[in-house]
Length: 254
Ligand code: PEP
Image 1 (cartoon, rainbow, N blue to C red):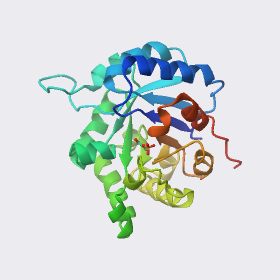
Image 2 (cartoon, rainbow, N blue to C red; image 1 turned 60 degrees about the vertical axis):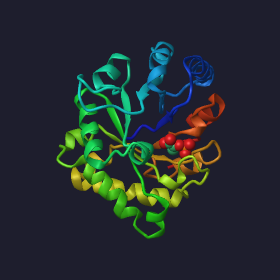
Image 3 (tube, rainbow, N blue to C red; image 1 turned 30 degrees about the vertical axis):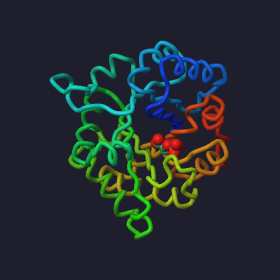
Image 4 (cartoon, helix red, strand yellow; image 1 turned 45 degrees about the vertical axis):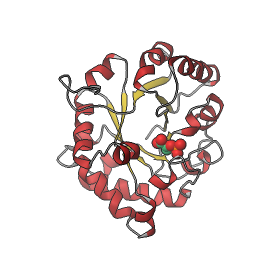
């Protein structure tokens, strides 16, 4: 019912030459991925290079952020129209690095989700708690509030077109992964909230990815959980062999 999505977030890595080398490596080893979706999200500066390489292949193209207006006097910003023009079909929104380093709040993130949808881009909305919040027993409250705030006022049809990435902040780039059981518990909660905002039937179709130190050696256990529908991968997506092993996860026996 939900096709798994394996997404690579390259963050601020890869010049155009390095991007070319990585994508060529991915394409060499990709094989048959007809039962899953594969996505790479390079920095803006490498989008065109990667687009030229992945066109006509099973690899989809996404961006790491987007601004809310189609055009205008917004120095340094990139619009959803520009991303479509470059062949993007996905965009990451509200990554914890955007929230913590660039000060993005739920209101702006919600506007970005809408702007992406309005231009036929699938937003990957990132949510997740910090370590102090988890230690204080607030993880669920924080994540539910982030989901509700970003999607407030949206129609079930709009919500049905988004992807959620649960990324505990303490697990991003640290090597410290949530246990499959803890991740599953949060994914189940997120799906329940999505069900309240739409309907259980709609919520059952929405992909909820896990992100936070996903690696070749933990992807199979994570994706075996019933509500984990793929992964948003940072560090391990920067090398062809490790991302390919994640893409080639062993399907759970359900
Ligand atoms: C991310 O950037 O979204 C991420 C999960 O990074 P990493 O896989 O390196 O923890």
